[in-house]
Image (cartoon, rainbow, N blue to C red):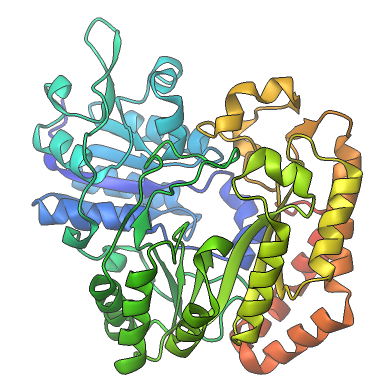
Length: 482
């Protein structure tokens, strides 16, 4: 029997596909986002006296050897994997590899996928010992401190009894106070920040990082998974946000930050205070954020601009108001248009977030979306292929609404796995390509990208370096090139 270090855990962020395809993955070429959730958990565990290392397979596709060598040399008692739906099966593969090296290692999975599917995960995947449901820091720390023994006493996990029965210990009653958390352990991400890249043309200067300053969302859109944080909304104070920005600038030389909060401006007063701090004590760090139209006005936009805001993303989803009303609250395209114009008036770039293939989608609806984009000041466009994720409200009835091929490895919003009634996959693919083609061929958009030679020179260098892959993707719409 191999002696394992009970106070040691290796955290892994799986790639999700074969490492040989990583060099041609158009999504990975476009951006490599640091796994901030894992880095945050690592910092929390270290504060509790637990030894932690992180291997990010997305940034290092050759990580099988790194994992193997770490397990052999350090002999951690725990392996933790944070997975999306599309990376889950790769996580299972890594777990099996780990158990072949250290048979007694305890495998713990976390993330939205396992929080949504709960008991089904342990039932179908015996290699997994525990899943963490919901917020992970405190639950994982307790599990490790108890060496995985007496799991019934740890709230927030699903585990397997000695007789094979699967039990859920229930959700934690209260979430953490986010201002009490240490900053994520960015230094544990090999090569940070230079190994990570923001989405092309979405930043002025490199290096960049991502940052999350809140958890949860009070809204209940049909397509959003709320299985981890629910509909609560907790957030860092303005002071914590400012110090986090300052830390990234001074410790790592970060010049641009992407705030990935679902609702960055939901608590207006904290953003007012944050922008004032950034204006009064400038850090010379630019940033992007995501907002809902209901929670911005011209005054706050002017403050965001002065504080360094470079781009704002708005979830629009579709230009078909009837379809929008079926899937989200406050389906007001006129309001969205008004706020897009205000963002531009404030001197901030705009990014429109759309989906194609929602239940109820029609060819006429997609053409309405195109018309909406072309008639509004949208600088950047992101069109996702609708994917019904476990944990989203619509997932439970999705088979009634069309044809769904639930292939987890392909559930990355870049494949049409759900086909709405009345449409075909070929039709959706053609409309998807036309959407992007017509957007990018407009003189206004081409001129805007030409201006990026000055405004985002690093993006142009990256784009030209990978030009053949982008051209191949434009022709084939295949994420993983050959």
